[in-house]
Length: 161
Image 1 (tube, rainbow, N blue to C red):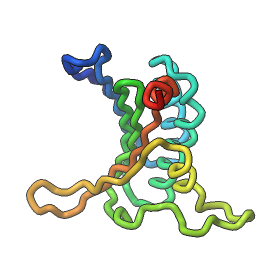
Image 2 (tube, one colour; image 1 turned 180 degrees about the vertical axis):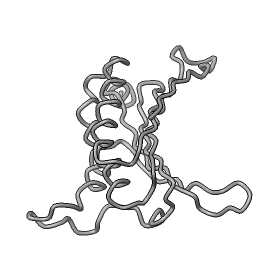
Image 3 (cartoon, helix red, strand yellow; image 1 turned 45 degrees about the horizontal axis):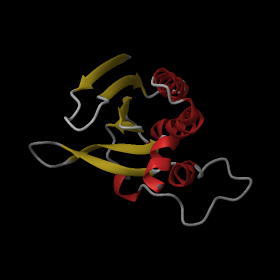
Image 4 (cartoon, one colour; image 1 turned 30 degrees about the vertical axis):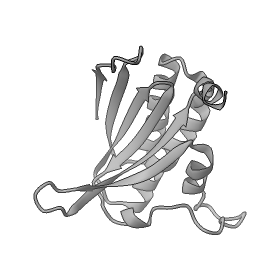
């Protein structure tokens, strides 16, 4: 398991730099918890405690989907902070199903043990999506990046004024 962090230079019109963090972990039963704790810690460190609960829930859902629906050996959790927004992505090396990733048309029944993850992402995130990753030489799909963005309430307030 490895963690990397990088900081990109800020653009001349902004005062806060872009900050990126990447956690790589095995695709194992305890990885959703590790992803949840990692993202929660980063949000607290960045001074965004009001986003912690939602981000922890959503990254847990995405990491759990990798565990349940792929044969990928590992996954990466990429967290980017930029201008009052946090984008969290879960990246895996399994391209299967990447074009069909979307919330169910009909919510699962009350007794169902699965099927709510992407519904939660769709309803709670300010934005989300899937990026199919391709081999540079052959253009063959080699994985996917499922991401969500949460916006700090102050940014929402300023945008609404």
